[in-house]
Amino acid sequence: MSPTFAQLGVPESIGRALAQRGINEPFEIQSAVLADALAGYDICGRAPTGSGKTLAFGIPLVANVDRAVPHEPRALVLAPTRELADQIKTEVQSFAGSIRVAVVYGGVGYDAQRRALRRGVDILVACPGRLEDLIDQREVSLSAVDRVVIDEADRMADMGFIPAVRRLLDQTAPEPQTMLFSATLDGDVASLTRDYQYRPVRCEVGEETPDVVAADHVFWNVANNERTEVTADVVSASGSAIVFCRTRHGCDRLARRLDRMGLQTAAIHGGRSQNQRTRALEAFAAGRVQALIATDVAARGIHVEGVDAVIHYDAPADHKTYLHRSGRTARAGKGGVVVSLVQPDQVKELRQMQRELDIQQPVTDVDLSAVRRLDGGVDRAVAPAVRAEKKRQPAADSRPRRTGPKPRGSAPKPRPRKSQRPGAKNQSRRRRNNNRRPRPANTRKQTLAKTGT
Ligand code: ADP
Ligand code: MG
Image 1 (spheres, rainbow, N blue to C red):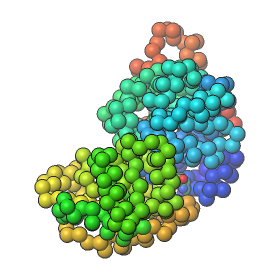
Image 2: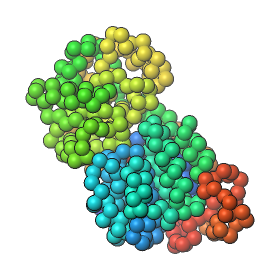
Image 3: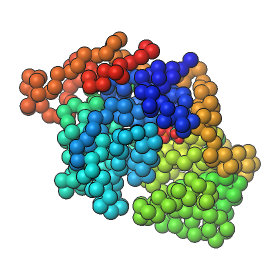
Image 4: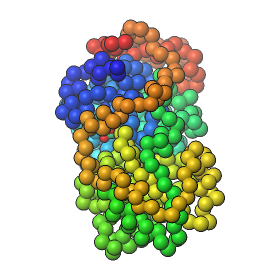
């Protein structure tokens, strides 16, 4: 039986706030990391999209964060896109009580963000670019930040944010607790872990290619000039779809065409203002538009519940992009269909990608019954508790795997402040070697010592 939130050490006030949203039992990644994260350990987590990572780091932040003075937040969550940052802020705020949560990202005015920082922000959610701007303007300092989350680290890497992330991590208080989450843990992400995490507790949940397992994948032969019509059919047959195009221009053009065919669509890409993007997302989430037409960057990390179909209108650049895109459906254990529109000259590349994904679907003629089998968009408001039910039927081998050092029994001993350690002055903030003592817990909140283990 999986532990309850209370057994994992989640404070009662947070448990109550979650219960009000129908969140009563932890998802796998949450069961796997909450106790250690609450106890102050570094966390390095790999889990598929929709597995509930936000609460896995959000709960420990809210439980442990200290109160900030103006301009000096105490906890920092770095996210690759504005939409994702907004979603994290909204989700964390829903159970944060009196803790002040704010979000900063580019593409919108500075005033509101400056005002919030001036008032004081305990947990700051940020996209790297705007945060660096605000630091340059002396509106914010990271020197008091002793808890950092790097969410969607693989996407940070894909988007070229790693140098900025490193610069930001170099400005925090010495040796903050770091929690890193990513769909993959190789390459640049591995080097972030190596340089900035101290003996992290590693948790890996689900398959490496989880989205392929969760959704139905179909590949259809469609000539270039028939793609719009087929897309319209899929959008109509499903309740809600996210359609991926390669370029901003392509998004706008397809949206216009679908609109002319009587569908309600909204385009979302980097060329649109933040307000337009926010409005588009809201309209889609509320069911006022049936299709969101998106570029890869814009769609990353979007969480809209009950998206019935993902359509690869333009072929994804590689298998990773295929996974990222496809992960917009079949979230939190729900089903979904992923439709690839394949032109004759793309079949060879497709085969290569399928091999990398380890899926062997044939390329067939268009078959809308694959789409109609779904619920349609009607259960977009499905209660969280129902989704949790579905989630709790894992295959026998999908239990969280803990590959890092497990913290020892009772509350770990407090760690001396860095300044008390020999040679501290000359040390870079970056962790160059991981051979020191096991990481001790947060010493300020002893009441949160682990229970039930
Ligand atoms: P990820 O960041 O891993 O992609 P999210 O944190 O966005 O996933 O969570 C996906 C959805 O599942 C969200 O709507 C969230 O509110 C919901 N959720 C998370 N944890 C639980 C839970 N324990 N029980 C029910 N719903 C949950
Ligand atoms: Mg997330």
